Amino acid sequence: MAHPWLGKLLELQKCDLRIYTNRLKLNSLPGDLKELLGKRDALLKAVDAEANKVKKIDLEIKSGESEIKQLDDENRKLQQQSAMVKKNDEYQAMLSTIEKNKQKTSAIEETLLAKFDELEKAKREFNRVKQENAAALKMVKADFDDVVAFSETLKKELSELEKARPGKVNGIIPEVLRRYTALMKKPESGAPVCPVENGICTRCHMRVTAQTLNQLQKGEVVECDNCQGMLYDPERADI
Image 1 (spheres, rainbow, N blue to C red):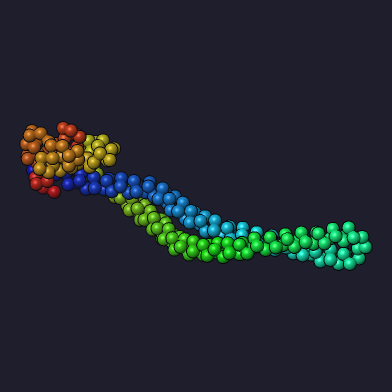
Image 2: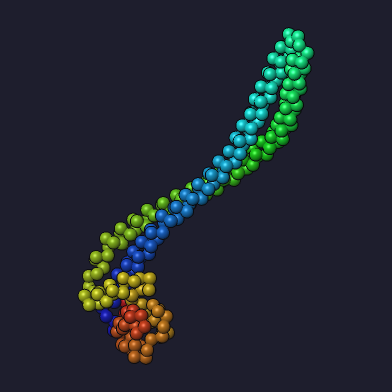
């Protein structure tokens, strides 16, 4: 016949392990949220990078067009002034400047033709990245919202478990509760109270001694020789 407090102890353990698990999950969520924010920022940064490429090329084109306008304006003034120049050397100097300006204009126009092609490619790439990243951003936001919602669910459940826990201690003798509490300080080692299955402790997965098996068959709760867990025989537990 098992101890009458075993069922209550297992209920307390179920509550405590759930509290432990919820706290672990809650502690990991800030890292998950940070990772998602990092993904969001990387996606936005990629779109901004493509947008900046478009802006840079556009500014280069505008700069080239402005330079052509300045050269054209200078040539018009020189042509107007040349009609009034009487000295041949001054006239030739003006013509030379006009020719040089035309050559500069021609070179800039060639560059601009390549820049216009470059701009169209940059715009297409920007639109592609923007569209793809917009879809990815929606997924990241959905994941972020799910994590936030999950966090709230965990907090609510944790609060309910912590409120219910004091009532689950009632009926467990102090000595047993002290042993259980000491083991529960390291829940990562496994459940403090665990069944023996086929002669194996389910807490440390080691075979128990023949003496321990004999005590378990009498319905006793026995300490594991290896991990000090509180062992019971589920077939004789009467819970």
